[in-house]
Image (cartoon, rainbow, N blue to C red; front, side, top):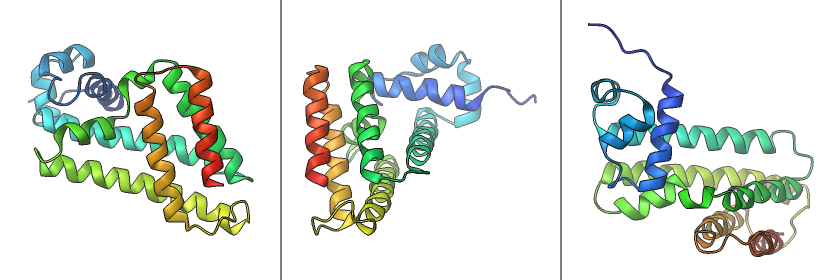
Length: 192
């Protein structure tokens, strides 16, 4: 039997886009085959089922976001300046219409909560990893005396992650650049 050859990252990013746009439940195999340009047999052969595609797409999403986050902070001399830059990227995604996709993790966890323990576990694990990545950067800012408010890095990270997800959710109903930038600035001010 011949092994199907395709660009796995492309396929997963296309599947990711479908899950972000339609949600897990409303993303059919037909939508996935149209988006990925693969036959159903190829998708089933590579990923097993829709859940397998979703879990692989979630892993790709987290890899992509981690790469973006790490690259941004990798050579940062001022964590707060880089955090402002990161928030600007999120605001721009919201303004450019990316807000209609919200975030694969948050959209999915609210949809499948309690329905599939394996998916919930994967989503929570990814959200916790995101929080810890923030905590590492914020600890650097505390160590460098950029942040002197007495709050721990993990407290600040939780607040920051909550604010980012709130910002993305708010942008679903209001994509006004001034309002979104103001909220991002207020989030940064509350952290620092």
